[in-house]
Image (tube, rainbow, N blue to C red; front, side):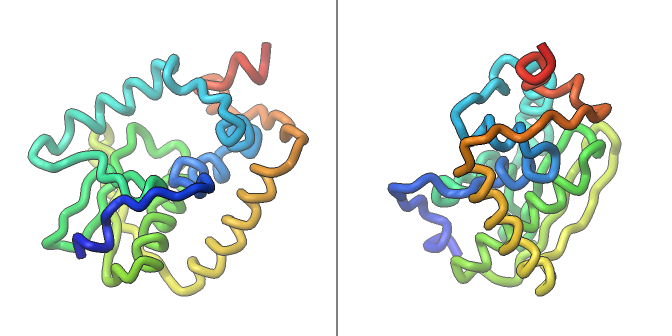
Amino acid sequence: MNNALHNHPTTEPRITGTMVNYYFICHRKLWLFTHDVQLEKESDAVAQGKLIDETTYPDQKHGIDIQGTVVLDFLRVKDRVIHEIKKSDSVEQAHIWQLKYYLYVLKSMGVEGMSGEIDYPKLRKRETVELLPEDEHHLHDILNRIEAIKHTDLIPDTINKSFCKKCAYYEFCWS
């Protein structure tokens, strides 16, 4: 399995797990992110999430980069389980589809039989994620839509959801 996980440089930016996550949260955020308007570095919420990722499961190697497309929070090779660590379950569908995308990418590389778990350490909750055949079809459509959003010249409208106030892009969208 290790040979399939080596990083291979590419010339065209690929769709990342973050992009899949943002697709489910906000198309405007996705568009801004793909156009190099990346405000996460200044976000306290993002910093808190990174701290949770870095300090939980200290016995695991974190940040496993696969071809510059997917960065796994950690992987338990023996159990064949990818773990994604999240601060909150407020946008759980985005987390689930991000992890399904990771499983999809690994499967496309010939790494099969994997499953995933989303860990919410602060909530003491864990969600098991499997990649089903119908998910693969749905992901294909999602990836096409992400490409369309990336390549449009028009910035998508704001969405005004309750979680917007915690978003790193809030001031950009609402100032």
